[in-house]
Image (tube, rainbow, N blue to C red; front, side, top):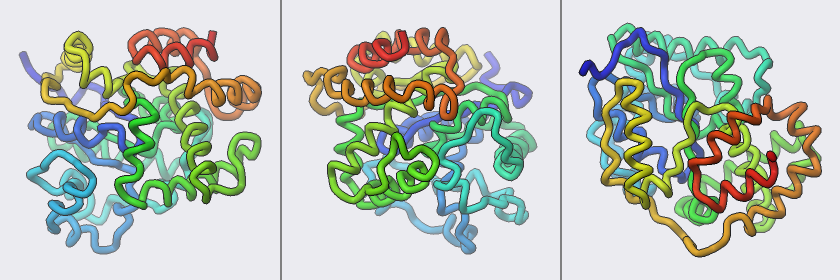
Amino acid sequence: MKEDNPAQPPIFIHAWWRSGSTYIWAKLRQSPHLCCYYEPFHEQLKRPDLREFQLSRQDQISAALRHPEVDRHYFEEYTPLVSAGQLQFLERFAYQSWHLRRDQDDGELRDYLQRLIGSANREGRRPVLCFVRSQLRCDWIQQNCGGVQIGQIRNPLSQWRSFGVLPYFRMHLSEINSGLHEKFPELFSRDCTSNEDQWNTFMTLYVLQLLKMLSTADFVLDIDCLTAKESYRRMTQQFFLDYHIAVDFADCECPISDADVRLDSILAPWVRKMRAHAKLICGKILHFDHDNAMRNSETIQPGLRNAIESLIR
């Protein structure tokens, strides 16, 4: 069977930090038929010395972040555009545009994504864009770029603990909070410095982003289920195979914290918060597709499913 065809639509994977996103990217990158862009909204793509940076070793970074080993630089797929001076990544893409409405106009961002897609197609490879800063704009990407939309999640307790691996994650969480507070002060407080404030921001974002992905995505990939359940691995592999991509996730080993904790209980305060601001969320943050959200919720881990279904029913 032919594994890929550049005429087929691009694939967009919407993850967040510390959710196994590098593992999924590295697995897909093994296919010579795919052009897998690592974190297309990463702020490092604005570096003036990006061409030199692409030649640097990534061993220490990979070890510190507990990433799988890679045999090429994370940003190698950007080389044709970087060499031609055509990448044109803008700094605001990383954090200042963290949320976009589905109908919002952003021609610069749309053109940037289309340049990535076009570069892959010119090489005769299918573009796969693996994001970790896109979950609150995944429906905007769907509206402006089409393609296959995949949401990627991890249980929030494991993900939050993994934020502690480097100061980077909490530092930028505060930056995200600041921008979202200006737009949605009802949901995001002004201060995000204490552990309690950061936890509240993280969980508010987690639930909003989960709702947006459930509503938008063609498939929601739960990395915990991919680790723990053979039946789920087969289902996920079949989803990719339906798009002519053969991938084996048998070696997926994402650590799972507090597997016995009831996630629906942990999420309950934020479910109540979302319900209290439902008009704001559905009017300004989400273009909500109830049927798609219910369909996607059926395949995620039970604690998350119970909490989200209690909110969207």
